[in-house]
Length: 182
Image 1: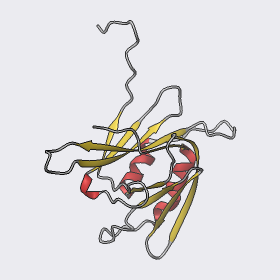
Image 2 (image 1 turned 90 degrees about the vertical axis):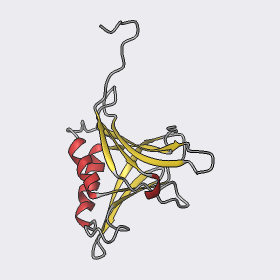
Image 3 (image 1 turned 90 degrees about the horizontal axis):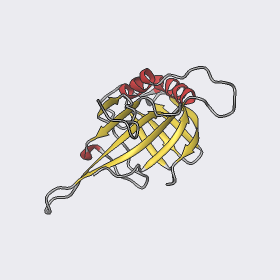
Image 4 (image 1 turned 45 degrees about the vertical axis):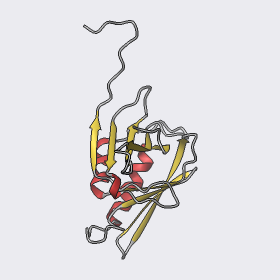
């Protein structure tokens, strides 16, 4: 059973890309250090702080949150370097029109999926990060990243997502009401 998003917020595509590109060179590439072998996005009501370190250098990038869900947006999401490369490859930003709010935007959601098991064993919980291009009138490209239940770290903040694989889904328009499919 897929529950509604735990966390949902919208950021400017250009700002988010710049922050990811700025901190990526400082992310640890040593797989023996999983606690820093990633880029962490700290999310609050007004900003997303993108951070990375390799023990010798550190970098921070600040991205404004333009829209958030009704639930409080506070927590963090971890992205591996291949995740960042996929986001940068799929989501590009065009030229902004010079207004205050960015024309190109991404909606980032943290989702939870609970699989009910036999009565004597606990339910299996997995989490996903979904990134959607919401720049136009209809949603555009969508990337989802599911993680198995045993890799998710639970803490005082919303779940920290350690991601495992991407699912790229092109957007398909709904059928028009009253039209028969031929």
